[in-house]
Image (cartoon, rainbow, N blue to C red):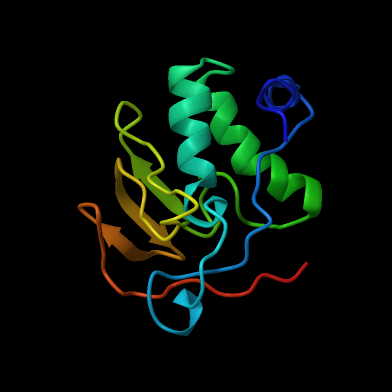
Length: 141
């Protein structure tokens, strides 16, 4: 991909942000092989590089493009916004510190700046450390 073209595309109001990477882990059966760096780095890269550093869009726009917009567009109900009765999927991060740490040679690295991750109400990352709690599940439309 061409970086300049990608930036032009990312700024469009109708463009959502996602990753085509499958669910992966740093270890275990889902940690085998060397995945593309986007596996662990897509969303931190958008928040750190493209939103904070390069100012392609503001933080609320970045979050919208990664959360409620895709959920609404592809029909995932009860997710994507913070609302009573919705699933509690939250990422609490420091916008001044968030960054991806992945490379092609070392793609299985957790990002910097993520303090907590809560999946279906279960704390999966606490104080920046993975708790080994597995609260996720496969979503079907």
